[in-house]
Length: 417
Image (cartoon, rainbow, N blue to C red; front, side):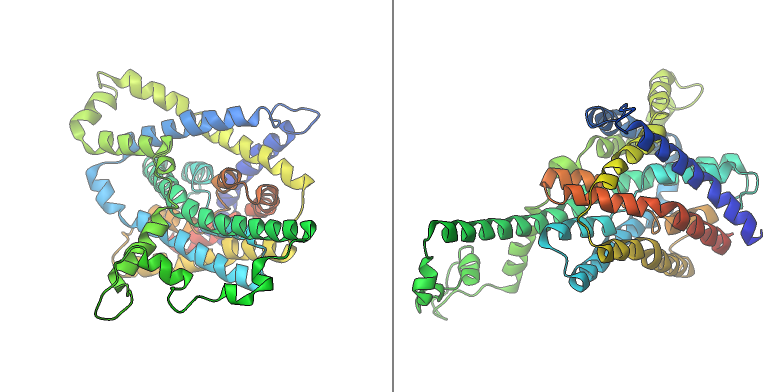
């Protein structure tokens, strides 16, 4: 196929997203106010607790089998690579721009987590249904595409609430400590009191018989040895302390969100053939249960896309993020990550880690070119840091997403077709 034909195929699903997002933005305006600040939390809860779990369960139960799962083992690795590479690039961006402490967690989350939900749910089926699609028979393409998207959503949800949430929480806690320290200094200055450390600088120095704060932390966990006279922490014990610290920032209740539980149940139903035959299929005795869940899942895509448009309205009314930071996030999400994604997927295909299925390779590459996940905004609200700035970042990254998604989708199809 010619490049222009592929461009048109890639453009159609992106236009759908853009139009529905614009409708959500319009419904959130003060004049209409159907998706205002009061209505959005209710719709968000419906999506979080009902619609998203329904679509994940129904797609996994119908399309995932034990054989297909063994063939898709690279997808969780690929998604994890997008998160790790994105967070590493975000750390470099933070150092270059010298971003304020309260924005660092937001920058890391925006660069690490892509929107693996409704964007893939719209793009993959639309590309399969197009008469000029390079992926062969539309029915086979749609069935395979649904399994890829469902697995992507399930794995992405786990990574967001484990990896990204832990990193953002760690960075947000540092910002909180910095703010508390500044407030304490201001209170001392306002009251006319002079901190003891300024009167007596020796108070800042450890005494000969007392350990430093870092040593004190380590020695609290490890008993001292008589042979050396002071406590020494072995490498293994230090690693255990660091692991305890990292896992302390992981909220396991959020990892097992409704979408995660639905993914687990969907895997069980799909993999265990007797259970699947009871629930899924035209002759299944309990097919009414599955069909009801599938019917509810049909509302997921429009609702999620409307919420994106409604949430972007706040970004039009606020500011506070420097243009260099916004440009840096756009460059990471839409230039650097997709370029690396091509290299990684092609290398995986070369070494036999990924099969010859062109749609599967296209999906893996597309996971590197998506805008930031909307759950980053949810995490910012939970951590109470960078909430208004998040709207600005989401506004600009989603505003340019239509252009970059179309271009990269075209390039990806041209590479794998």
